[in-house]
Length: 117
Image (cartoon, rainbow, N blue to C red):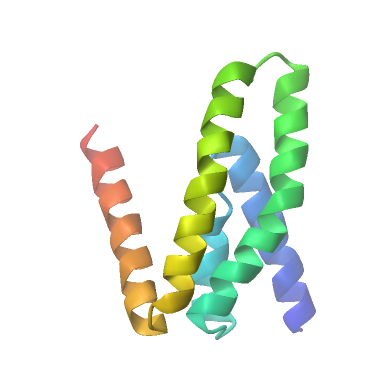
């Protein structure tokens, strides 16, 4: 039954990521941590691993329709690599409870910002 849950999670996050332009981690991390009882660090690491194929496919399909500003994407991705390294080292050094609270706080701030617009 757990396999069915993982497949449904993948379908939902892939759909949401490609439809709404959100990172699948917004769905993956809380789902893996809450619904599947993954420790926070493992939920985040697993989320990063499964987002890659979704992001590649979504990017390809949007680029095919001319909906990717390539120069901006390359610039932001280059900086994102550096930020990803720094963020990974920081996340791995934080206690799971603090990491979970920081992630939840970020989601709340984003939701408030989006609602207020």
